[in-house]
Picture (cartoon, rainbow, N blue to C red):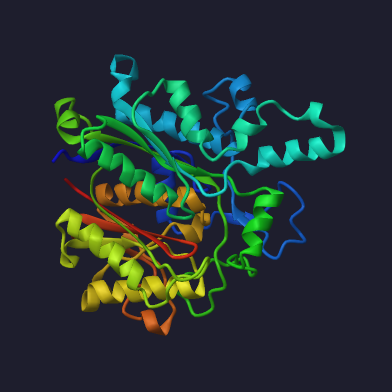
Length: 402
């Protein structure tokens, strides 16, 4: 079986738009969540978000192209360009029939769509941009990146709520392992900070009204949304070694299950999440004792946190208290379909730096997670990363040093 490794990473996030900036700022413990100031959000129950500052690709791509796209595609293009540059791959020298892309998101491009629909109702159909249909469409990031770089291999867009980019990375790894591609670009992009998108997220009842994102804590009251994008270059390992590429991590296993119980609420027993984690470890050939760090989905919902905490307890037992436990989401917001790729980018940096910050957990049922913040060294070579989408879509990605 061929092996899939990560050789390039690019991102744009509330904590920074370079990999070192992103990891360093998160490790320092700062918060990058604030009140929304792009429009009047004062009447929304939840009006905080993790916002990306600076341009969304304008520094790289033409103004003509940027004008046709929603913000989530801007960020996807920017992250993809950084990932390819980081990988050292010369795309002009490659067979682009053997390079594909898998990208995920949850909402599509609503900021662009809202403006055009407003013009439709107030000014008439002739005022609607001809790019409306292609700008908001959830497959827009995948399509625009494919077109810009001329990628002609296996490609796919995944829409599976918070688990979207997790699943995109798994599809990319499988394409490499089964010989469908030699190089894949995988990740996700999300731009949920617009009036209608924020309304949709608020009506789900899953957003914090206090402006505090506190997963696995007894006073948690939901998550806070964030925007961002991350792209990973996934490559066949022998090929990467032959060109002396830097290898951040190997994608070793993936597990995916569904609770099959409710349209929004997760199964609080943790059975579905535990099965996803078991499947990922089984594919990787890694036991619970070989896991050196866990990045939970950390949705901060009553049932999602119960599901995930109980799954960790079931899988790791007494070892859970020794497991460094961290998620970027409380610092940058939950970027929904992009969050899994951002988590994977952080995990790669933690593996290569040999250390990670830890979450502060304040929930009696989860007192087996003994780390109350601070930084811990990684003493084992594998990281397990979870995503829980609405309705109990459970995804688990296992990466580690080759």
